[in-house]
Amino acid sequence: MFIRGTRLQVAPDKVNPAIAHFKEKVAPTARKTPGNVGVALLVDSKSGHVIGITYWESAKALAASEQMGIQTRTQSAAEVSGQIVNVERFEIVIMDRAAAPKEGTAVRVNTVNGDADKVDALTVFLRNQVLPVLKAQKGYRAMIVGVDRQTGRSTTSTTWDTMDDLKASENAISHLRQEAAKAAAASGPVEVEIFATAAIDLAAPVSATTSR
Image (cartoon, rainbow, N blue to C red; front, side, top):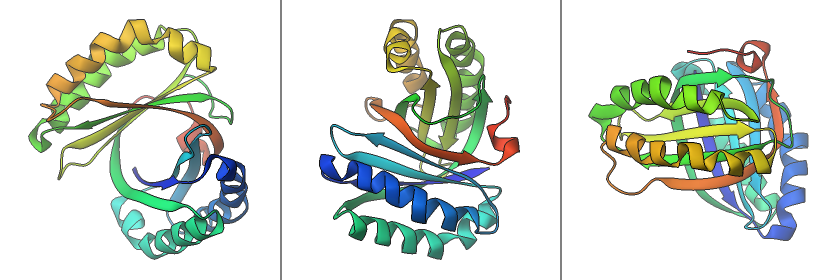
C-alpha cells in the first residue's frame, strides 16, 4: 500500500473551511479514483497546518492518480487561500490498528531523514521494539509507518484516543524515538508534529485491525 500526503498551510481561521472542502470535494473525488482505498485529513488548528492523505492499493495506482492529486490540491489551496508546502509519497511498511479509525483522535507524526540503505533496519526496529511499547499504552489506537526507499525519508504516525493519552505516552517512547533515528542513520533530529484527525474514510481492509 502507498500514500500521498499533501501539506497545506492556511490561516488558522481557514482550518474549518479547509476541513469542509476536503470532506465535500477532495474525499469524494479521491474515493472514486481507481485504486484508492482511503483518505484522511490531519489538522493543527492553532498553526493552520493541515495534511491531506490519500491511500492507494499499489504504486501503479498511486502514479495513475497524480493528475487527480494535482487538481484537488490546487483547488484546495485556492479555496482557502492556502499555500502548498510539499507533496510526499511513501510506501506503507507497517500498519497496526488496535481500534477502528475515527474523527477527533490525536495523532503524533514523527518524520526522519535517514539513509536509504537503512529503511529495512528501521522497519524491523519499529516493529519489534517500538510497537510493543506503544500497544501497552493507554489510548493507543494505531501505528502507520511509511518510507521513501529512494531518499530514506520516513514518517511514523501514532493515533490516540485523546490528546491527554498522546501526551501521557511521551515518557514511555521518547527514548525510543532517538533509537529509531539511530537505526535509520538519520542526518538530523526527528521532527515531531501533533495533529487531530479531522476526516477519515478508509476501505474495510485498511481500517480493520491488522499488523504487517
